[in-house]
View (tube, chains in turn purple, cyan, blue):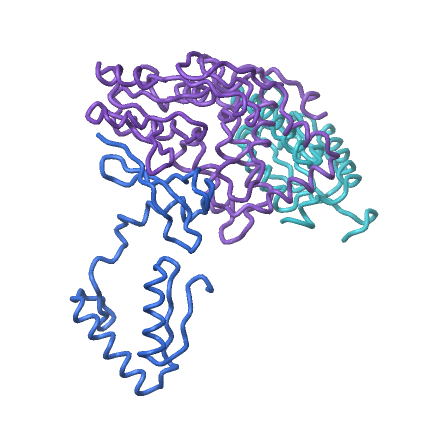
Length: 266
Length: 142
Length: 135
């Protein structure tokens, strides 16, 4: 990967490459540029993941005319495809450099496609089609599920970490900060409205990267909730976030009606 | 804690101005009887009902939420109800996954000429919510 | 054009979570948790997530201010410290040592907190020392 990035930077095909760098013994997000090619000596792939798409958004908004390279895993690429559709980034200004995730990471994430369209590092591993996390919750009775989720949401300290780290959350004004909706000055925040509302916002957005759950200081299994949202959208509308560069998410367009009342009021 | 026998549910109904609210008016004018547990909120179109509103209603202790819109093809704004049915479908499945009784959220198309249907929908829904009992959120986490 | 992240420690409380401050062209633009930090392990509270906002905030004090007739006026450090010292002396003489209380902060270092409680106990002569976390 190092050679490819060096070549792209030297040739001026990209103005900067957003990836990870080993700094002070830790992997850190960094943008490599032509002026500091030596930095590439500490370029790192590793297993620790950061929301690099968010960095790309920040830099691209500052320099909309330049072209940037970015390290992408399977999930990051899904994110990029969606960001292009949501008009947050321009397709011809982004050069993704792919990384395929190792078996261990794919299984921990229960990722259905742990590799991008093309990759320079890593080997293709089988995606996981049915999530054990979802199966565990679906096996519970209705009462057990209610208690499980209410107890989990009760741990929330309203740090907004799940939203701040999410590579797909780019809204300038967030409904979760609306004081009429989520009242201020109390913890935990509206149980369960806070999390259910976030889940609804993840329709057509969630790329199943899992950074939200990793960032939660209370270890709430939010990823399970969003995985379920993705499954609901797939079952009802045959839409998988980030799968195709054509076609917008069902809540983003009016489209045609494919559901009957009997599908809804079961 | 109210006993099951004396439980009077609180139901919030979001009704679209052009169809369902008209249907409710017709039911009133026709002197049709139906239980008084429902509080109606008139909206211009069910497409203006965000999942936020429905969640907020439940969070504040509503035992049931009814969304009444125009029939498909009859929406005053052409396709507003297309969004509604998508949103409610997703929200109901999400509520079921998190252990809530998703029958507490009910969607129906009621036109402004269907006063009888409106009264019947309210009667049936109120009965169903009575059987389900008070919303769990009322007693525990609101 | 430069984007880099700087590994540092959040100063808001005694936890000391590891954070990355995002710097774009010399300006602080964001905060990310350090996922490999052994203390915080990638988690941050709401204060930590927004720590980049206060650094260049226009509300920050840049000069000592002394209130006269309800108005804050700029002063030099010497003037301000002389004023504080003379007022505290006066209060101590008129009302006794225990009429003064000292409030410290989790954002200060252990050494700074030690100095403040030394000032309270040895100089002002009171045990009334407390800490912002208890409020």
